[in-house]
Length: 182
Image (cartoon, rainbow, N blue to C red; front, side):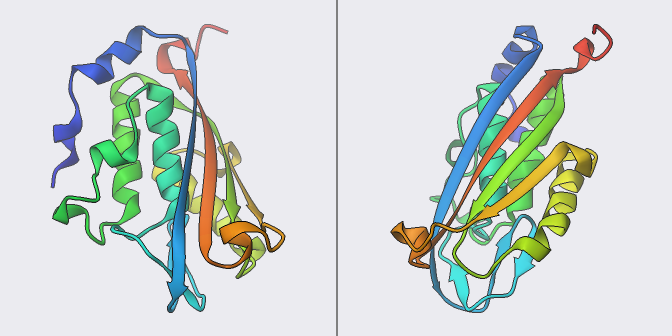
């Protein structure tokens, strides 16, 4: 499915808005026994798999929602509903690329991204630098503009009990024509 069909006049309303916009996104997926899962565009070896319609990458889903939120354009479920068969097992990178295209068409660029992954195990410390590079590549920015943090839930709630993985992302966008105004 060509994602350019999702663009309409709503995207261009944003161009007349403020020079900076902030968005937040979050996602959570249940875990089941399995052989690993996608996270931040990387395959994470694990005794768990993510239960999801797409590839279930919670970090990329939260990033997509953060960009869409900053643009005032709804959420990932509106653009890529889990009721559509074409989205089954779809790479979450497709969702980020569509959101970035919308951002570019609306005249904005990434200022910075700050992400938190909540997962009890496996520990993600050694994967954070690669996730940072993966996100930066998808966004077309320097890794210096991306931060990835990994937290546990101290054995509380669904994440702490090893039943779920979640992510939160904040994104700052700058209007492109404002780059030379400061």
